[in-house]
Image (tube, rainbow, N blue to C red; front, side):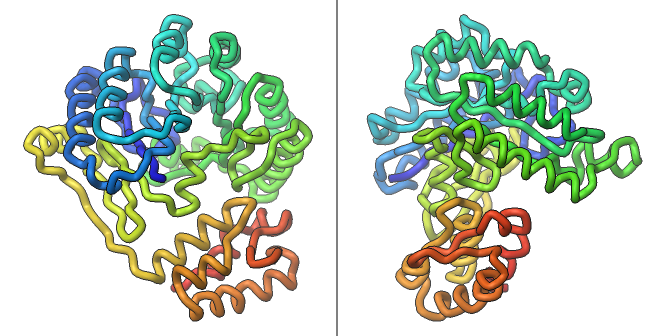
Length: 375
């Protein structure tokens, strides 16, 4: 099994916190879609005829593509790859793009999962983040998607926004969990260098929330989602039973995937490569059938580190048997040795052959992961 990721970089306007590659050059959409279709043709052998189990169209704002442009993408996908009949097929969308007419066009495609970037239901904070939808548009969009037959709906929320109170965060959670959604991804606001938000922070225009408050926000997130019947299956992800993100889970399990589009990453089990993060250079390269990308071959230590790091992010943790079979005895002994103090402290649990974060360990996960990785 394998995954396919397609990056759509277009946005009407950029959010102040986002450091993903994106562009507002909407007029280049058609040319870009043609280039992505051609890249799929050129790189169709990358996955060695593995059956595609998950497809994820991310961005940027993929819902900026027209129905016609999406039809071109899916036509190229099915022409160049073998797609599993029950494949999970996700598209990211902005709430204000999801009109009834647009959703009907999506219904004509094999898309069976929507991932909606809502971030907050507070209009004042949406304006600060430079989001282009309102809280009411977000609410209406979720209900509209559900009413038009989309059963698998995921939304994103951000917490730790400047000046955010616990009461405001609880209100966001209560609103989100009252909606007909099956999945919630929730992340702490990050001040990424080079973003407008980072500049505002450097100039003391906004202030980060205190670390103690961040922990309380995370505790509230875990408690509220559990009460609503959601399973906490990865540090930032929660789902109703049976609705985990199969595509993201494949990343954490080290399953190969092909990434097409500007700045898209690919992984074949032994190396990673990533396309140039420049719209014009990407398109010109594809038009000449000369892919512009960088590549990194992964050492055994790098692959072990990735396996441990991604495994510990999930509720399943990582398997010592897998470490033995794929990396060898030296790595098993190292993992056991470095995990021992955390097991004694109660921040790691060991069950059968699996090591996983305890409830207490989730709150200091970065440090634990670092301890178990080989420098």
